[in-house]
Length: 425
Length: 130
Image (tube, rainbow over all chains, first blue to last red; front, top):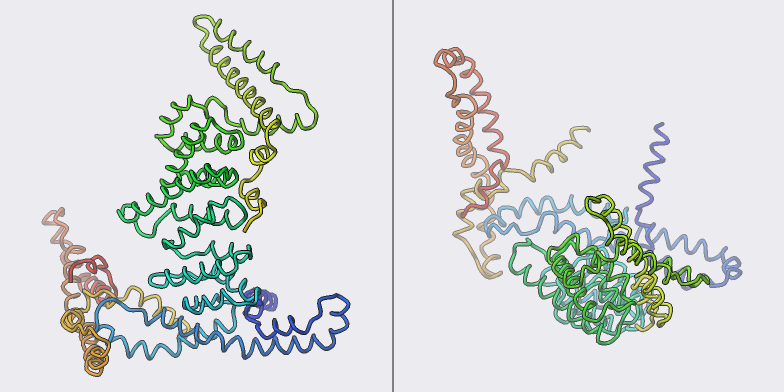
């Protein structure tokens, strides 16, 4: 029992051991890159020579190189643990200094041992070092630095220079989509004016994964603001961020960037419980209504309205202006359209005439419902709504099938995927 | 061995809620903080040889004398409220309970005094203007 527990503990520890992460094996990575041939045959032939060398490099990494590289991070850990200012005054800081000095070596040793043995994310480098790492000529090193950004958070006075470094790296390598995507996702909060402008320009292109990530990052900016919700500065920021998204939506509509437009609508719909996205969702619904409910955005418009109806009072007033479109089209309208499209593409006949007849018959029956037939009235009304929805779905499917293929794909597919596939940076 | 492991653990847990983390509980240090405010780095460095020992001495004075003395007042008030302040009892009942109350009072006082002296039990007071 003891032995199995020991083995289990060792196994669990080994999973997060420092040497398990390739970032912590620079020498071994170098040996692998330079010594190991690309072809399988070459690798097999060179193995007797390369395996011992790489193994030795791995041992040197674990015992010497990695511990040396984490020594400064252990100092930063110590600083964060006991040297952080108390904001109480000069004399308190003086009084604490001897105790802090006495505690520093054991805390540093503890942090150093932890970082040397286990895979603890490194501290963020200062913005100047970050700029150097993100503009490294070696793509692997750049991607590694970009991946590290997920563990780092720049705050306070570091936000602006770190943002500048990240934007400069994206501008230096605009064609490296994986890199730009990773960097833009992790732009520090709050977004600087330069970052907002850069993201808005990328978003307005309406093409590619970088555009998608720019829209997403701008959208996240409208979700929340550090601090309390009652803070006037927070409310002002969220209002400005939401208005910027509304302007971006108009730019996308004007530029006929349909995928990007629908993606932004989808983002608003999925976070409609927050005030910013709710306002944006209402704005988008109004825009769609004014444009006569374009079919390519039909599925998203329907979902957006149904979500809004259940979460925003103002949406009900707007729905009345839109002749209760989302209610008129029962829940499940979008799946009916998809089913109809599938049936028609597989060679099925149009059911429009039959559905129209059924709807008219139900409407006649409803008109002829006699006095005192309350239950029948309810049943007939439900049936009429279903028939109307089915007919509307059939008509929409026909329009989509006879229109451009991009509109049909956008109706049926995921706007983010389609935006990513559209090409461009 | 067990004590060696437990002591740092308990110390770490306790330090987070220690009395001296609240400026209200270190009156001498707080008074000096208000009085001595060097602006420049040079000024801070020049004053450090004086104020490091002074600060440590003031901190020790606060922790060992001033705060425990003040905490005794809080502890006495708590003991009064917990043991003696219940006026719903009749005179006979109060007379009957006089001896047990007198016996319990030192224990309750010691418990409250210990708590008030060592832990930051009035964290809201940190928000009051110093």
